[in-house]
Image 1 (tube, one colour):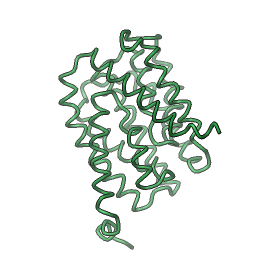
Image 2 (cartoon, rainbow, N blue to C red; image 1 turned 180 degrees about the horizontal axis):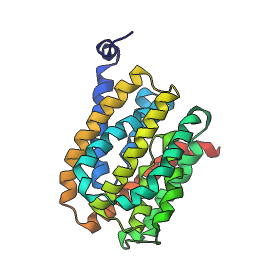
Image 3 (cartoon, one colour; image 1 turned 135 degrees about the horizontal axis):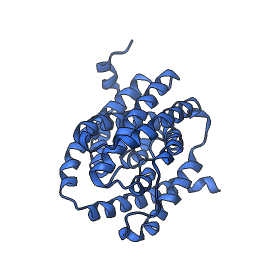
Image 4 (cartoon, rainbow, N blue to C red; image 1 turned 60 degrees about the vertical axis):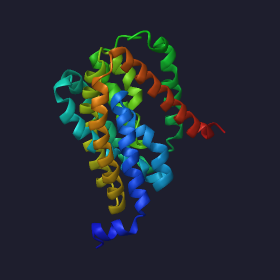
Length: 257
């Protein structure tokens, strides 16, 4: 059996360094703008290790990131939303891992991209804080759908932001609650990937290196977040959603042709 040390010797150093730096930068941005770190990593990670194995690697890194964010934002979590979101999300994550290798996720990313770009118009370029009332019970079906899709494509964090905003969460509360929900779902995602034989030793190494960078990025990002006003945070949130949406549309426009 190949040891971890021997495995590291077979992986180009620039791959490991690139994954670490990418994880750090993506999660600095993610912390100050309400998420999206996983989505920002999809293009680079896909180009380095291959599109087919990117979702489990990114989800492992995201789980590590969320563990550190739980520590950093523990007192800001709205546990009442978590109780609605997590149970159905766990079911969605497990089911998606089962069908992971059998579904073309291009259409999912394309539709999500269009939705994200539309948010800048829904929120009138950051001038309004809510566009509809989001009841807590609505997080039950939302948890299942988002967990299912994110397990397939590797990250859909920004799509949740409008729902959290319309539930009345802002800044640290939004990030903390979203992190708690994602952490519990992430444990099921990694467990189900492992159960269904998706992970190899090399993918574990990639995910751990990416995750270490993400943890450092969270710590740095929290310092930036503390100096932002709610209106600045809302604008950053919208910018991230639109940019993420455009990336997803451009990368998946080929599914239309």
